[in-house]
Length: 131
Image 1 (spheres, rainbow, N blue to C red):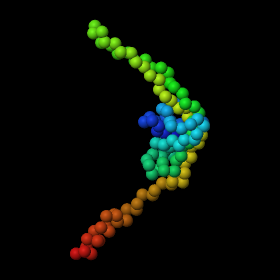
Image 2: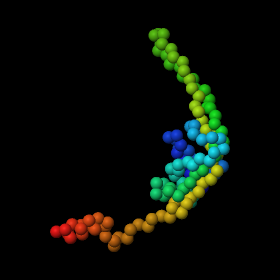
Image 3: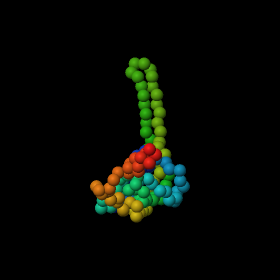
Image 4: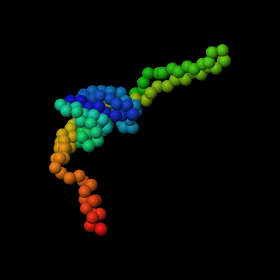
């Protein structure tokens, strides 16, 4: 059983017990956070808002840290133009504690029977009554 979650505009594949580094989340160390699932797989694949409505992915914030230093150097040859910069990304380490699929996620909607009339028919019936 695994899920694909979205955090900070990026997607991560997680299982129970997985630890991952994501962009800084506004939560204190030890807090539980809920992550937004994009896909869930437990035998069958669930994708889409309606199917994922009952899926819950929870994680705890293990620590806040900074990534490695990234050095940036720009220059133009023979022009005397040189710029040096750098940065360190603010990161959060998460540990996934639980993946749960609720009842809404497990239930699938049955396709409509071919004998049923389309839903647009009541509007046509109203138009006939007005005439």
